Amino acid sequence: MMTNYEEILSKFQIEGEITDVKPLGHGKVNHTFEIICGDDAYVLQEINHIVFKYPTVVMNNLFLVTEYLRDVIKKEGLHPDLETLTFIRTKAGNQLLQTEGGSYFRLYRMICCGEEMQKPETREQAYEVGRILGQFHRRMRDFPVGQLSETVPKMHDMKYLMRNLLDAVRADICFRTSDCQEQIQFALNRSGQFSMIRDAVESGEIPLRVTHNDTHYSNILVDKDTHKAICLIDLDTVMPGVAIMDFGDSVRAADATFDEDEKYGDIELDLERYRSHLTGYAAEMGRVLTPKERELIGYAVWLAAMEKGIRYLINYLTGDQNMTDFSDERQNLFRAVNQFYLALDIEEKLGQMNEIARAVFSRH
Image (cartoon, rainbow, N blue to C red):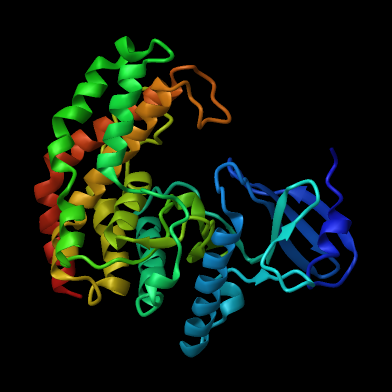
């Protein structure tokens, strides 16, 4: 059924006639469109309420975070319309629009000077990834994190993830367990090393902060002319979490020598890009992090790679239920193997990563 954009837009607090509508971005979760109304550009998204079962909770988090960010950015003497998303309420004052057909739509202003970041290839680009993430964490440091809801339960709960893996192995609903015995054993052999961050949170050595929880480089807008990072986007998973896990996942994606979709690529962590990435992050968050966060920041990169690999392995064992497009029935297995190769490389380089961290943090 065709979407009636005019009718949907008429429910939001904007004016003007629609002059253009086109698909936007490469997101696999929400349907996203660029809407031109006269001289103004907006992003309209239909929220995937199968992935996000409680869209109103997601939107409440988004409004709390972006409105707080706008205030912080104004106090810094900068431009909130350029440095964070601006969500627009419906004419009824609601944070999103629910249609009679059960769909959910939200609207925000487009940052017209921005474009989606591509995979970093230089130290300067890696620095920007770290800097913009650190800026987000720093700007949200005083936000009362208890106001945010958990939009994705057990997001980084490794015990829960390992239970899911064992359940998938036992069920073997797609008869694929025999294909990946080595990968299953790889995860099991390291399962005793997964609790260091969780234990530090429970002991109070690591605080819960406002975290993004999907810090892939494609969720960063960069200026089309200067190529400097502008802000983080795709804030659906913003909720209480551990800042260094955000950092670890951003390094995992941005500083690996190959993309995770490569088939059995000889994937490694680029230490020079890692140094720049951490330097950018520390420029914003170096004085904010606790000693334990600083100590475990390299470990967090390893844990992020392990977590991602295990998720891909579970997806493969359970029939690729979380994939919307793939070219090979073993693509999730390829992805898992790549992440485990990356984790192996990080294990070999962790001592160097810790030395880099000590040097970087000594300057911040």
